[in-house]
Amino acid sequence: MPVNIPDISPEVQQAKMRFGIVGNAPALIAAVTRAIQVAPIDLSVLITGESGTGKEFFPQIIHAYSPRKHARYIAVNCGAIPEGTIDSELFGHEKGSFTGAVSARKGYFEEADGGTIFLDEVAELPLTTQARLLRVLESGEFLKVGSSTVQRTNIRVVAATNVDMLEAVRSGRFREDLYYRLSTVQITVPPLRERGNDILLLARKFASDFSERYSMPPVTIEESARNVMLHYRWPGNVRQLKNVVEQMALFHAGGKIDADEIRQYLPDATVSYSPAVTSSAHSYDHERELLFNMIFRMQSEIDRLREEIEHHRPSAADVAAKSQKVEVIEMPTSLVRYGEHTHPAFSAAIESPVSETVPPAAAGMTLEETERETIRRALENNGGRRKDTARELNISERTLYRKIKDYGLE
Ligand SMILES: Nc1ncnc2c1ncn2[C@@H]1O[C@H](COP(=O)(O)OP(=O)(O)OP(=O)(O)O)[C@@H](O)[C@H]1O
Ligand SMILES: [Mg+2]
Image 1 (cartoon, rainbow, N blue to C red):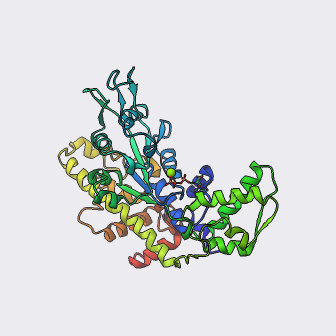
Image 2: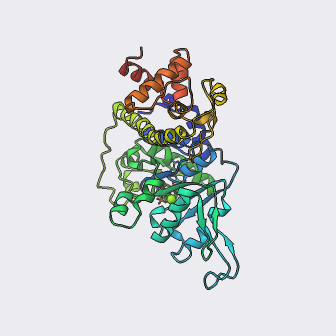
Image 3: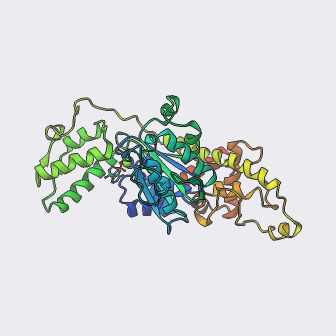
């Protein structure tokens, strides 16, 4: 099996178990890792991926690993609420604001104050609702339908979509400014056909779940059928696989499934799909891309913060108090750093604007220089111990070794 389990951090393993996520494909693990890394930082996150790939796990991970975990988590399916009532559902309404509004009602943005809202199928939001959403994301302010009193709320938004958002923006169905606001961080959930052996792991798990649920002996999937499954396109992704296994569990309980049998459940099964060969270099590139992407987005946020902070230069007493290396910063922005979960690449960069003893990590540096500096500092903090450094940076030891070599940090 081309699976390298030791590359999966204990934290990711734990999240997988807690949420019942099955699979070890590098792109899936990268998505879970990214959700855990971004969870403590109060940024909006957009989850993208084809239908049925498991996007709904991710806002839950983000909420559960964030400081908002004790506050409310509300999931809203934007595509399932009629256009006429969605503003009122999300933002509430005043009594008499429309026919049928017999009493005032709180919306989800008020109910979930302090917590997280998951906006599923976000591309389905009507343009008028998009304008309200942009306002609440930018200023925390909103108006109930039929009210002129501005209200405030403190919400983190995680959104998901299976449509091409850039296309929705191009065709005028989605506001560009809102798209950028929502996708401060993006997490892409890979299609099932690109997850290799995960297809078989998932099939085995669903087969055992259904046999238990229906109290029937489990089906056995023969090698010929496994091959068909590995080369099928799975247009409906994990949801489709689950449905197929459920049908087999019911109609072939205790039996053996071969290639011919399984094809009956798979539309267009004869059109086989050849997964792109995933070399280890590819997964390195992917990991690197993730890291850069995050640092990149953080950098512009840091530049903005630096400007703000330069307008509030600290007093002499503040400087003395800040002479320790690491500190918790109270920031006058939506960007909040919380304890240990923060990715070191973020913390190193975020600390720099206010710490008087550490040279700025991000100012005027290229992304590569920022990454090099982040790794150099982490090595220093850990007395050169690579294992501990890799753990702190949340990257595999192999990746760390390679980066140390690339950056001449030996
Ligand atoms: N890695 C996984 N391990 C176990 N179950 C999974 C996994 N991925 C998806 N599932 C299951 O597959 C089904 C579909 O997942 P989900 O509803 O999250 O899809 P989605 O990406 O939100 O799709 P859509 O865009 O159509 O809403 C769910 O029953 C989910 O529990
Ligand atoms: Mg969904």
